Length: 100
Image (cartoon, rainbow, N blue to C red; front, side, top):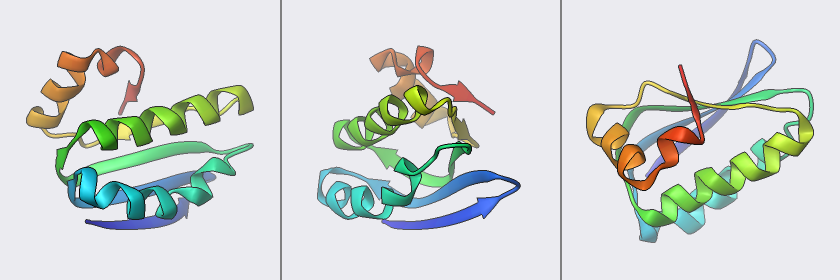
C-alpha cells in the first residue's frame, strides 16, 4: 500500500495506491497524520489506484471525517471504482461522505 500526500489549491489530498487492508492500515494511519491538521482546508481522498478497502480502512476514513467536520472541513472521496463504491453502499458509508 502506497500513500502520497499533497497540498493542491488549498486542499489536502491523499492518494491511495494498492490494497488498504488490515495489514496496511497501521502504516496508512501514520501517513494520514497531516490530514488531521485540516483547519481551513478541505480533504480529498483520491481513490483512483485504490484496489480494495477493508473494515480497518473504512475505520480510518471515518475517523478522519469525524476529526475534520468540527473544524469546518469537508472530506471528499474522488475517483472511486465501482467495487469500492459497492462496499461503501453496503456499509452505509456512502451516506456519510461526499463524492467528487
